[in-house]
Amino acid sequence: MTVGIGVIGVGVMGADHARIFARDVPGAAIAAIYDADAKRAKAIADEVGARAVATSPEALIADRKVDAVLIASPDSTHAPLTLAALAAKKPVLCEKPLAPSSRECLEVVAAEVRLGKRLAQVGFMRRYDPGYFAMRAMAKSGALGRPLMFHCVHRNVSAPHFFTSDMAIANSAPHEFDIARFVLDCDLAEITVFQPATAAQDHSVKPVFMVIRSAGGALVDVEINNNAGYGYDVKGELVGEKGTIALRAPAPTEVNLALANATAHPEDWRPRFAESYRLQNQAWARAIERGAPDECAASAWDGYAAALVAEAGLRSLAAGGGVVIAMAEKPELYRR
Ligand code: ISE
Image (tube, rainbow, N blue to C red; front, side):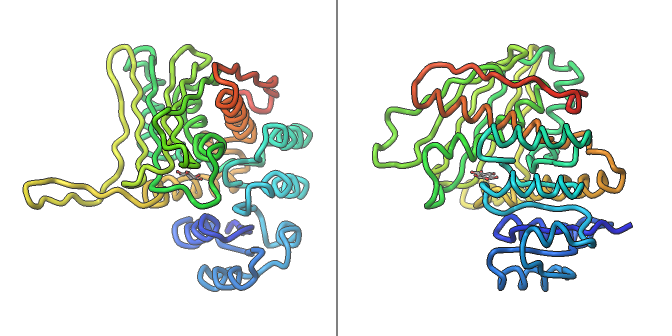
């Protein structure tokens, strides 16, 4: 069986997803593409051999050749389009965030509960990164003893022009919020956000440093620095009672020159997480064939959890001090 994928939004990420499905996902083909920029939609459709260019997201969702929908349109459209796909009973892979607010995420959760089926997956692709995956497996095995601390660093070269200080917490950090829940296998209970007083005042996107208490008791610290300057750099180290496990960024080469040894940093997250996107999309296509979500998939509930932690983080940034993360009651559908 070939799964027909409809891609809504072919900006940077949507176009990459379309290429991954066309090139690297056996058993999947791009059935239709929609983008607000019709020229761009046509160019990507030609590139990936898509059957059709849809005239609207609704038409794409309704297309009978579209078995499943990938959403990579602007953030504010994620929840409404996910709800539309669920109404058509079609599986969805929605780029993060599931919605800009936890309230809207809960609307998606409620729709799935009414359906009695998990059809939505959020694109928290780091769950498929071999490093984080090994970290989670090791934490689960108990080999490190009880988890004590999880150190996370997330740096970008420079923030895009539309980025605001709040987006460091609402847009970048949700990756860490989700991966901390995934690796530690528990929810996050309280967050305190700091900013360095030494950051230049005219600097609109300041670094943030967060300390999070997990429900299991381990502490998570997260540095988000959207203007690190030198490269895209994500670090993670889980500290247990007996040892630690840390990520090593994949580097295809190292250069030895002029008495120095160097590996290069990517410019953005796409090369760093290329393998994660591939594995995520392959697992999603297999899950559609099977008719059951992938074990590692971030569910609509996980999308809600990340949005809720971000909201608590923004409150902490505004008012100072720790903010308790009060999760709604988890519906049976999302309990393992
Ligand atoms: C950015 O906001 C994203 O959306 C990417 O997924 C992430 O990897 C990047 O570092 C963020 O800043």
